Length: 292
Image 1: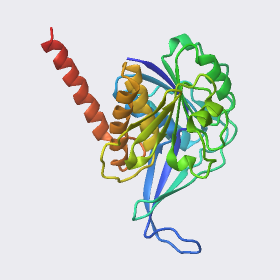
Image 2: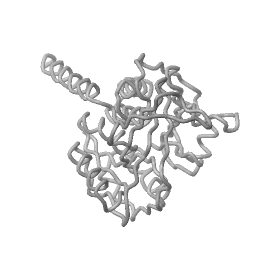
Image 3: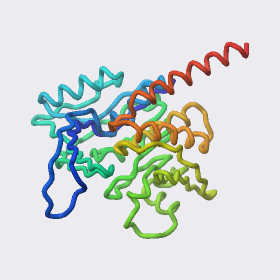
């Protein structure tokens, strides 16, 4: 399958299960839901590994017990961690406060500056995915554009994100100036942009391009936890495109992956996606044998 390089965060999520919805000035009880693997690197990478791709992660963690735990969990899951940097100091937990009605509030520490080294030799890679504020991400993307597929998540601060496919959510676009979303996407991704995809939960996703807009429905799901759903959607989209699917077909596959993600009690996609991919591979293998 494909060789995919992810530039994304690797987090230790601490889950706080609150007794009621958050409100200004309120007092709340919580149940400690423990630690779990999270961040765009894990959320995106696990499904791609389960789909048979070789995945390497570029990220940064501290030289402490949590950093050791993150590397152990991630590498055990099958993601190549040799490009992850260790920095002095602690790896702070990401606090996820979950309310009974399904809302989540994320409190994260101020991340130290993460500087990427010189770009790798892109001919070895089939895809680059960027979902990080790391210094040097723009130059990495620009050097990769002519060599492999480049997919980027829209940054919260609207920084430049050169890529072929730019992804964001309707909620992340809230409050931004109204107007032509295709031109907005090009202002972030540059002339190399082929598609700007905006996901919108149960309403599905839209893809904007120079040729217009297409819409793909969401797959119905019982929502348990939406954390990481956008990362898993991006993984499913990349998988589809790298397997030769047309954009609309790849978006439909991404919707399936995202449905598994929101039904899981974790930010990573969960075991049902792994089973789905295994069964799909088995069915494809059986069909190929019968077609001989």
